[in-house]
Length: 261
Image 1 (cartoon, helix red, strand yellow):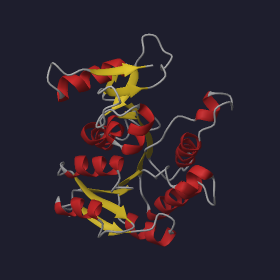
Image 2 (cartoon, one colour):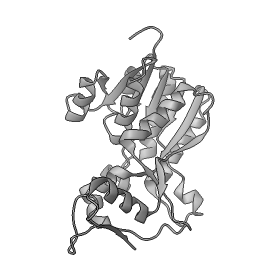
Image 3 (cartoon, rainbow, N blue to C red):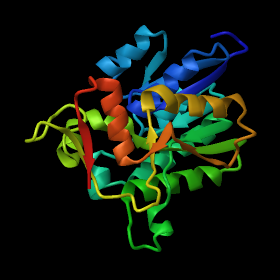
Image 4 (cartoon, rainbow, N blue to C red):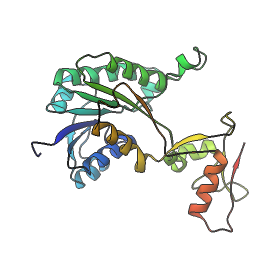
């Protein structure tokens, strides 16, 4: 590490969001990146190692591991996996409790700048009518970090709707098959209720291409973005517009892709 470089730890650095952040920051000689992983020998971790990114072993539930990983860090990016079965089913400690451990370790290690992959507080925004565990817990982690006076800056970067989900088998089953399976009529179809806004606009995000750059931009000038909420969106399109763009980019002109409601 060059003495003038700023060291940034990436919690959740082998996932979609975290790896996008790690790779974007790694491309800038101003920063040195340290990715935390439960298993540095995993394929996802080794992909980053081959790019020249440091990967260290750390358990996100271990204060000792986290303090060691955060030692010497100027900043950290935090993303926790909301899809873990225990978090989704409210079995055992919550995502918020995990986030609190991470934030407390960062305070003890002397970290000054924090960027959190947060989400809007669903319960608060709907007056308790539509609680969403992942949204509510992520925002609670953000609020806890914002309350720590030891940090110089804390910024929230909310991710839009992952375009990559269209290639996830679970999402394909729910939403009709786009982008890899044809339906019974031979179409790549996206089936989804309307968003309800007029004109319909969905905040799409290319995680691989764009999310890391949003976070990168914050770390370039953290004071400017202190206590701000940034919505990371690549492009706003209707569901039909997304399907049409997919058709245009992926298939010949004589192939039809459709969006249904």
